[in-house]
Image 1: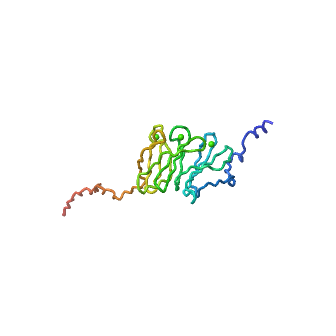
Image 2: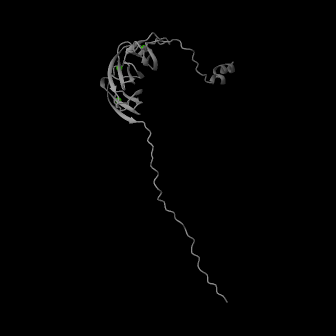
Image 3: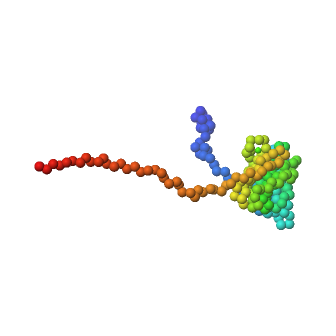
Length: 221
Ligand SMILES: [Ca+2]
Ligand SMILES: [Ca+2]
Ligand SMILES: [Ca+2]
């Protein structure tokens, strides 16, 4: 019996092999008044301890281009209800979630490719958001894409790093109180190649000559 109990407790070689995760077909599909969604983020936007989803769209529907953020509420069991939306200009490309004003309601930053801007939305009660400041990138040809939320200067306000696709750089916005941001500061991502040749070697060759052979004098008899 002791041997049998040990066999039951010890994992077999087969059970120790990690099994690949298998996902089935989508359980649900949500259609919002948008086309070409470009990114989703996850957050608990109504603070009920159940994860929700926010999606952005590059192109709103032709007849209604003011609903480009879809908010999809989760019930914590893998089910989601029909989306609500946040009105924005058309042309969003990326979205990031963060806490920008310190009220614990998750906030959103979305990049607006067409106008070179990043829009801030501050979370409010339920699945609602209020329009916050609009951040303008540094250059005329700036086209924001990806946004990362981070803490870059060690204070208590979240900061933003925005990929400026048109400008070939990263633009940094420093967070301040009340979802305000200053900046941008820019960081080039262009690779700098050196075209100068290596400096001419100043090494000198040294050549060791053989020691002079002492002349020998032959005497003839
Ligand atoms: Ca929730
Ligand atoms: Ca907030
Ligand atoms: Ca900061």
